[in-house]
Image (cartoon, rainbow, N blue to C red):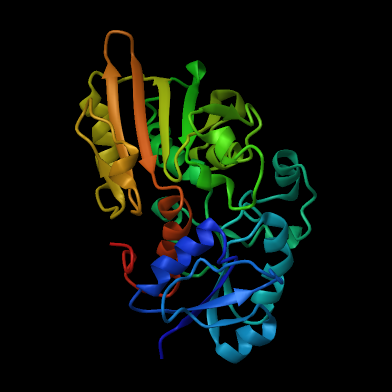
Length: 335
């Protein structure tokens, strides 16, 4: 029988993207799970034959035989729901930041809330397939990476591992995202009149995605400067990353590091030296595109990485992880 997977939070942007991708996936059957009453809320599902909607409960997990439940919810809701879903026998793929950081102290420091399920943090697997593929198939609780850290780590980690970054000079990551990255819940900051014809920085020096980059790329906080910006577009992330290179003579040397690390990766695309990706190239895809520019005289290097924040930065990567957990081809439903 076709495995059934549940989606909680399907009315949000990431949840709706999950439904869009799962409906065309050839090997699973999506089920929409309602975890709260939303009177008058319109479902984003417009298909003439939408997935079945059922209550989000342990009984539903058991009766329907759901093998995986996606939580496209806020961290506090994910913490509330995940234990019951796991106890009912389903694996959980959580798209929030609830289980990403490994210990409750780090979570509290960056999210400014007390973690309500600290016992689950040690068992959660961080789901960046390009770096943790070996742990993902056996995961019961899979923590999907944040959108900003996905692009940042894919761009930075190979260079740090290769020892070509002058860490004493620091790394600067100038990141820009479309408005959907803030979620669907209305706020003044993301309202039309505030965003249109505007460009703004936010959460300077305190963005909650920073510790994910430090964790995966093995950096100290003093070595990494990150600033997020809000673009007046609906989707996409573009990160411009600046650093001083050491032991490198040409842009081709940096590109060779990426080629060696990512030669077998289906969702990483590398550009010729001196060329950079843009958001149009990755829109509605699960790709991360990376381009490198290098000035040999000064040792300055610039890496540009681009992803779709709702796909590789959220729903697409979650399905990539699901494929690995179910023993399916990693690219199934994503190419």
